[in-house]
Length: 145
Image (tube, rainbow, N blue to C red; front, side, top):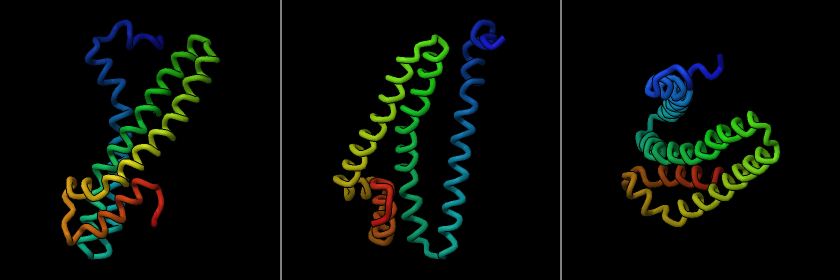
């Protein structure tokens, strides 16, 4: 019964059905970002709102990179568990864990190294630069300066 989607359903329908949870998680993230922007907007300073809004594409990119190992690793781990390969599960979960940390450090370092170029690329101007830069550093390092 569990394999019905793979055996009896068209690929396009199975793809849509299996991608629905991912899409819903992205919608939840979008709502989170909208709520974040709402509370930042309570300051009544358009430059702060612009700074946070300019960082949202970078936030989304970082989440996508994290999902590579989170969701991709979970998919592979579930298949290995189904096959009874406990050693493979340990290897894959260790790889995903350490690669996520290593890639986070590399991406964070590159973001800091190319901070000015990235801020110009995402559209920060002299009015929003300070706030966009503060939020950008928070995204790159994971904490405030």
